[in-house]
Length: 119
Image (tube, rainbow, N blue to C red):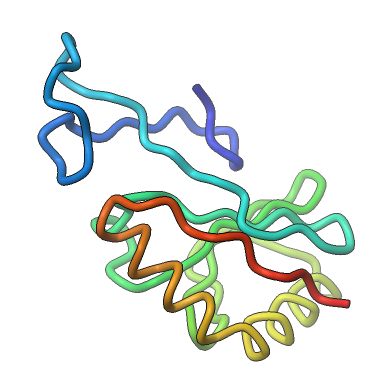
């Protein structure tokens, strides 16, 4: 299974929140889309705490992909057009509390909630 950014992702089954009865050594990580607005898809991995070492979201807009730190909107990886970055920065500013609550859920193996889009 590919994630929102088109990468195959895996997490060892022994991670908190995963079924120990899985017969192979790893299971795929979930990355639900938590919001969508103006053609921008925003997702958050479940149990994604290792690579970026900060709370963050994964974003896709057309052929562009990026990882943005929350709660400040700094681009950690990838590239996004300036207009979409400004929209994302505004959305992150408005939704900081929900994003941090979702990050807590996702980092403990729970599914994050949907967050209202930018209107």
